[in-house]
Amino acid sequence: MREDKQLLVITHLSQLLDFVTGIGGFIVPLIIWLTQKDQVAGMDIHGKMILNFQISLFIYSIVSIPLIFLFGLGIFLLIAIGLLALILPIINAIKVSNGELPDYPLSIKFLK
Image (cartoon, rainbow, N blue to C red):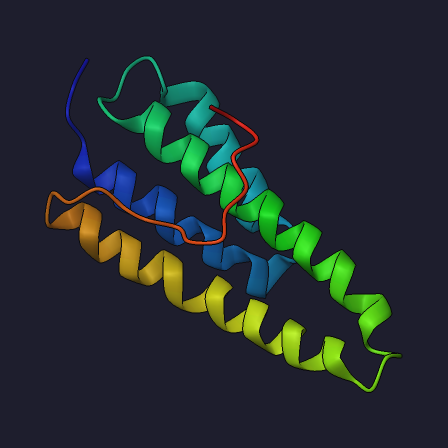
């Protein structure tokens, strides 16, 4: 296995494609993880973290849609989800470039 911090950083930052394409923030990290998990050190752990985070964000978004009709609470949740989807990949990409382990709070562990 080889070490490739740049690919790990790119994998974290590729989540931002959600803001451009809608689903690219899930597809691109999934493809990178599936093709590189056996070749790049740490890719398996990072890929699982990213995919768990993306799946969790999707579930939280689906749950918040009906809450829009309940006093508009869902709008605030969608704004919070959008901010998390924007800020956390950038913070974790910086952590990875510094050699630290990333952290995605509120992620449900689907892939272990």
